[in-house]
Structures are given as structure tokens and as C-alpha cells.
Image 1 (cartoon, one colour):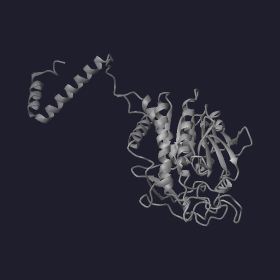
Image 2: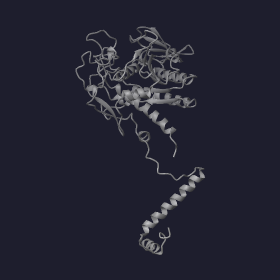
Image 3: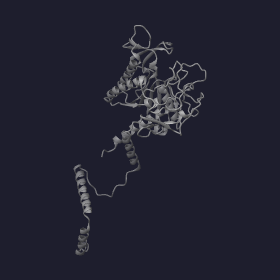
Length: 434
């Protein structure tokens, strides 16, 4: 040991130090000060400092979580609901031959639609990307959970799309308690997942008063302050509930509140105030959200799937109107306006009010905002290819529902992306804050 500290060696060290550049000395001093400060900081926290070998690099699973959280942070800056439709050469991901869940009036290829390009587009948000639906990933997220669609046939249209997408990797078992085809319940035994739809075209209590009515589509009594028990008695134990409705409100309706006739929409009856469809639409959503917020045992997540515009051109649905376009619009070729805008904004206003109330109970409200994207898809409707040629149907040219496969599949791209975001937020909250 004495040899190590010999005068010759000390002299040599002194000479070397004199040759060391000032920047290196400055860097060395900085590192020393940083180390001392760090040790002092941890000592204040009461953490014991042990001198051990450097820890191994983070595990791959930890890296994956960090990458996912970074993706979430980046996604916060991106509105997935604003963008354009771009070609998707690998689509469709199922066909009418591979999926049994497609209803006849959305089975456009079965009834001879000649073009196929309407199936080969995907939604591209402006500032990020929206992954194509991954059925295996979706099933892992919803393992042991349940999802309910509440609303009309367009909501059921989305459920059938979801079933077709899931059909690629697993199977469903019909567990419906009744034979009513409008309300169905399905079980996915491989993942203990339950999927259901509850038929409620007005969301509130409704009774048909006249099968023909002023427009030959029926006249309905709506009890705007009474939610429809067909769904309120069913959803309390569901983990996710997707609420939607729209086009039924165009029909003639009588509006009741407190069991008293308050007015109507296009009832064409003397001495009854026409309150317009917008009044009934607003009150129906207000009653719906209040009912959800008042369910004592409901702990699930509520999605509002926003209004899906129809695309009748050259006439109304019963006056020769049709939808024969074969390509999507670009975002600068059309805009949300008129009735579509009014219904959309009505939904948002009632949704935001309900969200504020729901937060007091810890409920989560989420907006599945498909309106702009689907406004750009006049090419995706069945038109005359939702039935046999010459068949006597109420809506001969259907520009309300959507072909399957077709644009409605993108709604489930949105849904999966939102569920992933929820999972990543939860993972982020559980990580140590540093």
C-alpha cells in the first residue's frame, strides 16, 4: 500500500491534473455535486441508500407499458373523430358468406349490389392513425365483462358488425331469454363475455296510437318523462352501455309529460301545438341520462353513439329519394348542417349535462362521435340492395341503415380504440409517480 502512495506516483498525478482541461474539471465537479444532492434528497425521504451493482434494464413488459402510456399521451393531442376516408386494400375483414349475423336488409352483396369499393375504405384521423379492429385484442379487454346496445335498428346494425368482426376468432351462443328478435343476448364462452341489444327506438316509453298515421308510418305516443323499462330493468349489471337513437323521431308523435298531452310532432291535429321533433329528441335523451344516473347499482361506462345522418338525394325516403353514390365525400365536399346539425348538437348538450351529474357518482360518460365520419359515407347504404327486387317493403331505397361489411365497421374501430385508452389510463394511474 505504501508503494501506491509513493512520492513519484503523487508527482505524476499532479502533472496529469495540471494537463486536464478546464471543461473536464467542470464536468467532474458538476457530477460530484449532482451525486451529493441526490443522496441528500433521498436521505430526506427516509430511504436508505445501499451501494449495490447497477440494476438490470427494465423488463420488456415494463417497456411495453411505458410505450402504451406514451401512446396515450400522444393520443390526447389527436381527435380520432376528425379526418378523412382513405383506401383500405386489405378490407373487408369478413363477408356476407363468412358472417351469419348480418340481417337481410343490410346484406347488400346477397341482393346483388354490383360495386364493392364501398367496403374498401378506412377512417384516417387528421393527426394520428386509427388501427383496424383487432378481435383478439377486443376480447381480451372485455374478458369477463358485458356490453349492451340500447336504441334502434342502427344501433343493432353496429352490434351485428361487432359480431361479424368477433366471428373471425371465436363463436357466440344465443342466450336470449325471449324469442324477440329485436332484443337479443349473446354469450362468448371463450372469454366469458356477454353482448346484448335492447330494442328501444325512442329510449322512452312509447305506444303506437295509429298504425298508419299521417305519413303511413304510424303515429306514436311518447311519454317523454318515462324511460323505457325494456332497457332500464336490464342494464344495471352491464359494464358498458352504448346508447343511440335518431331516425324514429322523424315520425309523427304525440308528446306526453306527467301523463298529460303537451304537444306533438307533425300530428296534423287541430288545437295541438307542434313542438317539433327537436323537443321530443332533447327530452328523450334528458330522461334517458337521468335514468342511468339514478340507477343505484349501475357502475358501468356509458357511451353515447352520436347521430348517424341518412343520405337521401333527389327526394325524401317516400318520394323517390335514393343513395347511389359509390365513393365517400372528402371533408371539404359536405358539412354538417340543418336537421343533422340540430340533432347532433341536441345530443351533445344533453350528454354534457348528464356527464357532469354522473361524475358526482363516479360514473364515466364517453362520446362515440361517429357523426362527421359517417356523414362522409353516402356510398355505404343498402339503397335497393337490402331486399329482393320488386319486394314490397316500407323503405324501398334504404339510405338509413348500412351495408355489412361497410362503413359501420369503423364504429367498432372507434370503440376498441376508446376501450384501449381507458385501459392505458388505468395502467398509468397505477404506476409509481416519478
